Image (tube, rainbow, N blue to C red):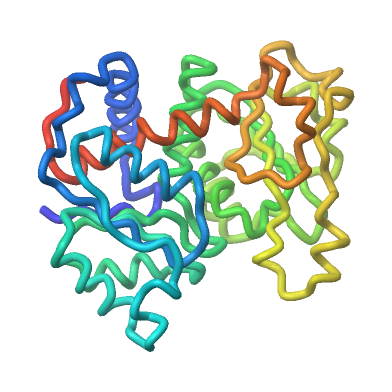
Length: 308
Protein backbone atom coordinates (compact mmCIF):
# COMPACT_ATOMS: atom_id res chain seq x y z
CA UNK A 1 0.00 0.00 0.00
CA UNK A 2 1.34 3.45 -1.00
CA UNK A 3 2.12 5.53 2.10
CA UNK A 4 3.00 9.23 2.27
CA UNK A 5 4.38 11.20 5.21
CA UNK A 6 3.07 14.75 4.93
CA UNK A 7 2.47 15.51 8.60
CA UNK A 8 4.08 13.99 11.70
CA UNK A 9 0.60 12.81 12.77
CA UNK A 10 0.60 10.51 9.73
CA UNK A 11 2.72 8.30 12.00
CA UNK A 12 1.38 6.72 15.17
CA UNK A 13 3.35 6.97 18.41
CA UNK A 14 4.14 3.26 18.06
CA UNK A 15 5.50 3.83 14.54
CA UNK A 16 7.65 6.74 15.73
CA UNK A 17 9.06 4.61 18.52
CA UNK A 18 9.84 1.84 16.02
CA UNK A 19 11.56 4.28 13.67
CA UNK A 20 13.71 5.47 16.57
CA UNK A 21 14.57 1.85 17.40
CA UNK A 22 15.54 1.21 13.77
CA UNK A 23 17.67 4.36 13.67
CA UNK A 24 19.43 3.29 16.87
CA UNK A 25 20.16 -0.09 15.29
CA UNK A 26 21.50 1.58 12.14
CA UNK A 27 23.77 3.72 14.30
CA UNK A 28 25.04 0.64 16.12
CA UNK A 29 25.27 -1.68 13.10
CA UNK A 30 25.56 0.32 9.86
CA UNK A 31 27.03 -2.56 7.85
CA UNK A 32 23.77 -4.52 8.18
CA UNK A 33 21.96 -1.85 6.18
CA UNK A 34 24.51 -0.90 3.53
CA UNK A 35 22.73 -2.77 0.71
CA UNK A 36 19.15 -2.54 1.99
CA UNK A 37 18.09 -0.17 -0.81
CA UNK A 38 20.28 -1.53 -3.61
CA UNK A 39 18.75 -0.66 -7.01
CA UNK A 40 16.29 1.78 -5.38
CA UNK A 41 16.20 5.46 -6.29
CA UNK A 42 15.30 8.50 -4.18
CA UNK A 43 14.27 11.73 -5.90
CA UNK A 44 14.88 14.96 -4.00
CA UNK A 45 12.58 17.69 -5.35
CA UNK A 46 13.60 20.87 -3.55
CA UNK A 47 11.71 23.94 -4.76
CA UNK A 48 13.22 25.90 -1.83
CA UNK A 49 16.87 26.11 -0.65
CA UNK A 50 18.14 23.51 1.80
CA UNK A 51 21.46 22.18 3.05
CA UNK A 52 20.91 19.73 5.91
CA UNK A 53 17.58 18.23 4.86
CA UNK A 54 18.47 17.65 1.21
CA UNK A 55 21.96 16.37 1.86
CA UNK A 56 20.87 14.16 4.76
CA UNK A 57 18.23 12.53 2.54
CA UNK A 58 20.84 11.97 -0.15
CA UNK A 59 23.39 10.68 2.36
CA UNK A 60 20.73 8.38 3.88
CA UNK A 61 19.82 6.79 0.56
CA UNK A 62 23.46 6.38 -0.47
CA UNK A 63 24.26 4.76 2.89
CA UNK A 64 21.46 2.27 2.22
CA UNK A 65 23.04 1.32 -1.10
CA UNK A 66 20.55 3.24 -3.24
CA UNK A 67 20.98 6.15 -5.63
CA UNK A 68 19.69 9.71 -5.85
CA UNK A 69 18.34 12.05 -8.53
CA UNK A 70 16.55 15.39 -8.38
CA UNK A 71 17.05 19.14 -8.22
CA UNK A 72 17.91 21.70 -5.56
CA UNK A 73 15.99 24.75 -6.77
CA UNK A 74 12.78 25.42 -8.69
CA UNK A 75 14.72 27.14 -11.49
CA UNK A 76 16.34 23.78 -12.29
CA UNK A 77 12.99 22.15 -13.02
CA UNK A 78 10.30 22.55 -15.66
CA UNK A 79 8.19 24.54 -13.19
CA UNK A 80 10.33 27.44 -14.45
CA UNK A 81 8.58 26.86 -17.80
CA UNK A 82 5.15 26.83 -16.20
CA UNK A 83 4.73 23.12 -15.50
CA UNK A 84 2.49 22.38 -12.51
CA UNK A 85 3.95 20.79 -9.40
CA UNK A 86 1.52 17.90 -9.90
CA UNK A 87 2.89 17.19 -13.38
CA UNK A 88 6.48 17.49 -12.16
CA UNK A 89 5.87 15.01 -9.37
CA UNK A 90 3.94 12.62 -11.65
CA UNK A 91 6.86 12.67 -14.08
CA UNK A 92 9.52 12.09 -11.44
CA UNK A 93 7.50 9.28 -9.84
CA UNK A 94 7.95 7.40 -13.11
CA UNK A 95 11.72 7.41 -12.52
CA UNK A 96 12.13 7.02 -8.76
CA UNK A 97 10.95 4.67 -6.01
CA UNK A 98 10.40 7.39 -3.39
CA UNK A 99 10.34 11.21 -3.37
CA UNK A 100 11.42 13.77 -0.76
CA UNK A 101 9.89 17.16 -1.57
CA UNK A 102 10.35 20.66 -0.15
CA UNK A 103 8.20 23.56 -1.27
CA UNK A 104 7.67 27.16 -0.06
CA UNK A 105 3.86 26.86 -0.25
CA UNK A 106 1.96 25.25 2.62
CA UNK A 107 0.14 22.11 1.50
CA UNK A 108 2.15 21.64 -1.72
CA UNK A 109 3.49 18.16 -0.79
CA UNK A 110 -0.03 17.00 0.10
CA UNK A 111 -1.35 18.24 -3.25
CA UNK A 112 1.60 16.68 -5.08
CA UNK A 113 0.99 13.32 -3.42
CA UNK A 114 -2.30 13.07 -5.30
CA UNK A 115 -0.32 12.75 -8.55
CA UNK A 116 2.53 10.51 -7.41
CA UNK A 117 2.89 6.80 -8.09
CA UNK A 118 5.47 6.43 -5.29
CA UNK A 119 5.65 7.51 -1.61
CA UNK A 120 6.10 11.25 -0.95
CA UNK A 121 7.92 12.57 2.10
CA UNK A 122 7.28 16.18 3.04
CA UNK A 123 10.73 17.74 3.52
CA UNK A 124 9.19 21.05 4.61
CA UNK A 125 6.27 23.07 3.26
CA UNK A 126 6.39 26.82 3.91
CA UNK A 127 5.68 27.66 7.54
CA UNK A 128 3.49 24.58 7.99
CA UNK A 129 5.21 21.25 8.69
CA UNK A 130 8.57 19.50 8.66
CA UNK A 131 7.96 15.90 9.80
CA UNK A 132 11.43 14.49 9.15
CA UNK A 133 13.05 17.29 11.14
CA UNK A 134 10.65 16.34 13.92
CA UNK A 135 11.76 12.71 13.71
CA UNK A 136 15.34 14.00 13.90
CA UNK A 137 14.45 16.05 16.98
CA UNK A 138 12.71 13.09 18.63
CA UNK A 139 15.67 10.79 18.01
CA UNK A 140 18.00 13.45 19.46
CA UNK A 141 15.83 13.93 22.54
CA UNK A 142 15.62 10.16 23.03
CA UNK A 143 19.39 9.80 22.76
CA UNK A 144 20.01 12.76 25.10
CA UNK A 145 17.34 12.02 27.71
CA UNK A 146 16.64 8.31 27.25
CA UNK A 147 12.90 9.01 26.97
CA UNK A 148 10.21 10.98 25.16
CA UNK A 149 8.05 11.77 28.17
CA UNK A 150 8.21 13.56 31.52
CA UNK A 151 10.18 16.71 30.73
CA UNK A 152 9.77 20.45 30.20
CA UNK A 153 10.66 21.84 26.78
CA UNK A 154 10.99 25.50 25.90
CA UNK A 155 10.54 26.67 22.30
CA UNK A 156 12.24 30.01 21.73
CA UNK A 157 12.17 32.47 18.82
CA UNK A 158 9.97 32.35 15.75
CA UNK A 159 7.07 30.15 16.81
CA UNK A 160 4.67 31.65 14.26
CA UNK A 161 6.43 30.63 11.06
CA UNK A 162 8.64 27.89 12.51
CA UNK A 163 7.41 24.70 10.82
CA UNK A 164 9.85 22.62 12.87
CA UNK A 165 8.22 23.95 16.04
CA UNK A 166 4.69 23.22 14.79
CA UNK A 167 5.59 19.63 13.93
CA UNK A 168 7.46 18.96 17.17
CA UNK A 169 4.66 20.38 19.34
CA UNK A 170 2.21 18.09 17.51
CA UNK A 171 4.46 15.09 18.04
CA UNK A 172 5.33 15.64 21.71
CA UNK A 173 1.73 16.42 22.66
CA UNK A 174 1.03 12.69 22.19
CA UNK A 175 3.56 11.67 24.86
CA UNK A 176 2.95 11.69 28.61
CA UNK A 177 3.64 14.60 30.94
CA UNK A 178 5.31 17.01 28.52
CA UNK A 179 5.29 20.60 29.75
CA UNK A 180 5.51 23.28 27.06
CA UNK A 181 7.00 26.74 27.52
CA UNK A 182 6.50 29.04 24.52
CA UNK A 183 9.02 31.89 24.40
CA UNK A 184 8.58 34.53 21.71
CA UNK A 185 7.77 38.16 20.96
CA UNK A 186 4.04 38.85 20.80
CA UNK A 187 4.21 39.05 17.00
CA UNK A 188 5.76 35.58 16.66
CA UNK A 189 3.59 33.52 19.01
CA UNK A 190 2.67 29.93 18.21
CA UNK A 191 -0.35 30.01 15.84
CA UNK A 192 -3.74 29.58 17.45
CA UNK A 193 -4.58 26.54 15.31
CA UNK A 194 -1.49 24.68 16.60
CA UNK A 195 -2.39 25.49 20.22
CA UNK A 196 -6.01 24.48 19.66
CA UNK A 197 -5.30 21.18 17.89
CA UNK A 198 -2.18 20.01 19.72
CA UNK A 199 -2.53 21.45 23.22
CA UNK A 200 -6.00 22.71 24.14
CA UNK A 201 -7.91 19.75 22.68
CA UNK A 202 -5.75 17.39 24.72
CA UNK A 203 -5.94 19.54 27.84
CA UNK A 204 -2.18 20.02 27.91
CA UNK A 205 -1.06 23.01 29.98
CA UNK A 206 1.41 25.44 28.46
CA UNK A 207 3.06 28.71 29.39
CA UNK A 208 3.67 31.72 27.12
CA UNK A 209 6.33 34.29 27.92
CA UNK A 210 8.59 36.84 26.27
CA UNK A 211 11.46 36.25 28.72
CA UNK A 212 13.90 33.40 28.14
CA UNK A 213 15.86 34.23 31.30
CA UNK A 214 12.81 33.89 33.56
CA UNK A 215 12.01 30.33 32.48
CA UNK A 216 15.54 29.03 31.86
CA UNK A 217 15.90 27.28 35.26
CA UNK A 218 12.85 25.05 34.70
CA UNK A 219 13.78 23.77 31.22
CA UNK A 220 15.04 20.26 30.47
CA UNK A 221 15.25 21.03 26.74
CA UNK A 222 15.65 24.39 25.01
CA UNK A 223 14.66 24.42 21.33
CA UNK A 224 16.05 27.58 19.73
CA UNK A 225 14.90 28.83 16.33
CA UNK A 226 15.94 31.62 14.00
CA UNK A 227 13.66 34.44 12.96
CA UNK A 228 13.08 33.53 9.31
CA UNK A 229 13.60 36.46 6.96
CA UNK A 230 12.04 34.57 4.05
CA UNK A 231 8.66 34.30 5.84
CA UNK A 232 8.25 38.06 6.38
CA UNK A 233 6.38 40.35 4.02
CA UNK A 234 7.82 43.47 5.66
CA UNK A 235 11.60 43.81 6.06
CA UNK A 236 11.17 46.39 8.81
CA UNK A 237 9.34 43.83 10.94
CA UNK A 238 12.10 41.29 10.34
CA UNK A 239 14.85 43.73 11.28
CA UNK A 240 12.96 44.72 14.44
CA UNK A 241 12.48 41.12 15.59
CA UNK A 242 15.50 39.21 14.26
CA UNK A 243 17.66 39.67 17.38
CA UNK A 244 14.89 39.13 19.94
CA UNK A 245 16.77 36.20 21.50
CA UNK A 246 20.49 35.49 21.43
CA UNK A 247 21.64 32.55 23.56
CA UNK A 248 25.01 33.15 25.22
CA UNK A 249 27.02 31.31 27.89
CA UNK A 250 25.97 34.01 30.36
CA UNK A 251 22.28 33.30 29.77
CA UNK A 252 22.92 29.62 30.49
CA UNK A 253 24.25 30.39 33.99
CA UNK A 254 20.89 29.55 35.60
CA UNK A 255 20.12 26.55 33.35
CA UNK A 256 20.05 22.95 34.55
CA UNK A 257 23.35 21.05 34.31
CA UNK A 258 21.69 18.45 32.09
CA UNK A 259 19.82 20.89 29.84
CA UNK A 260 19.84 19.85 26.15
CA UNK A 261 20.03 22.70 23.63
CA UNK A 262 18.50 21.93 20.24
CA UNK A 263 18.24 23.98 17.06
CA UNK A 264 17.00 22.78 13.64
CA UNK A 265 19.56 25.03 11.93
CA UNK A 266 20.59 27.06 10.03
CA UNK A 267 21.36 29.58 12.73
CA UNK A 268 22.03 33.23 12.10
CA UNK A 269 23.08 34.75 15.43
CA UNK A 270 20.44 33.41 17.86
CA UNK A 271 23.02 31.06 19.41
CA UNK A 272 26.47 32.46 20.09
CA UNK A 273 29.25 30.26 18.69
CA UNK A 274 30.66 30.28 22.23
CA UNK A 275 27.77 28.00 23.23
CA UNK A 276 29.03 25.33 20.79
CA UNK A 277 31.65 24.31 23.35
CA UNK A 278 29.05 23.79 26.07
CA UNK A 279 28.45 20.05 26.65
CA UNK A 280 24.72 20.80 26.74
CA UNK A 281 24.74 21.90 23.08
CA UNK A 282 23.13 19.06 21.11
CA UNK A 283 22.41 20.72 17.75
CA UNK A 284 25.41 19.23 15.95
CA UNK A 285 24.30 15.82 17.19
CA UNK A 286 20.89 16.65 15.69
CA UNK A 287 22.53 17.12 12.31
CA UNK A 288 24.09 13.64 12.46
CA UNK A 289 20.92 12.04 13.74
CA UNK A 290 18.96 13.37 10.76
CA UNK A 291 20.67 10.95 8.41
CA UNK A 292 19.87 7.86 10.47
CA UNK A 293 16.22 8.60 11.15
CA UNK A 294 15.69 9.34 7.46
CA UNK A 295 17.31 6.00 6.64
CA UNK A 296 14.78 4.34 8.94
CA UNK A 297 11.88 6.21 7.32
CA UNK A 298 12.96 5.34 3.78
CA UNK A 299 13.12 1.66 4.75
CA UNK A 300 9.64 1.84 6.27
CA UNK A 301 8.00 3.54 3.30
CA UNK A 302 9.64 1.15 0.83
CA UNK A 303 8.48 -1.83 2.95
CA UNK A 304 12.04 -3.10 3.30
CA UNK A 305 12.50 -5.37 6.33
CA UNK A 306 14.65 -3.98 9.13
CA UNK A 307 16.74 -5.84 11.68
CA UNK A 308 15.90 -3.92 14.84
